[in-house]
Image (cartoon, rainbow, N blue to C red):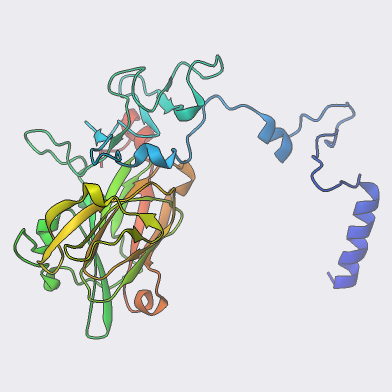
Length: 335
């Protein structure tokens, strides 16, 4: 179709339709039947409907930040079915949805709603999904080791840039007195490899370890996160960082930096969600990612946001899955 033909079609279409002013809604009878209602499947009609339950797309950012006193307000999840935004009841298969700041007693919320703080039902309160369930046997939460990755190391060498995820800091050869072993954190990007697996409903805490002498910039697609803590050199703790106010009164001292020297881990004042954060050289930045949006399932990337670095290998693939329904029905094994 030529440009001029397209213009004629649009003019003819607009002449047959009611013209709208800016801000006016398409809520008149615009379906194809002969009545005066508007009960077809238009976008406006869909948006006016009240769903049976509502997924909390992103919880309030301050709800997943540690307390300003330096103590944490989130506990480890006892099992993989206890989710932050919702969870599947293993007994009934019913989805329990947290209502958060909307309130649970307004007469509209279904009975399967529960508040963020777990006051309605013990065991449904918000929690962080760690690689293990933190019991005395230290049983892995998931069988897929890619799901257990929480430490992500940024480094470079020989003109290449590396990003590698591990379950714990010890896997990188680091201890309280020794630096990171660079030979254990070198991994170039492979477009055909899944580096990290996460599950819908989990709230994960990641440690972004910049083991390099240059700064890097972490960016993740499709997701948002909060930044909770940063570990700085002991003699160089700033008052502000990336526009965050550093809570210098509650810094934990004698923390080991990636190069083996002493550092201080300092909490940050809450500043909402973001999808990119600068990583100072020789530092550890802690973030919390709520995997609560059911529409983010699939495979995408996280990487250094400096183009020359990601193009030379500093990038990983993450796959977000939502297997709860399959597991409850017994159609798929636990992952």
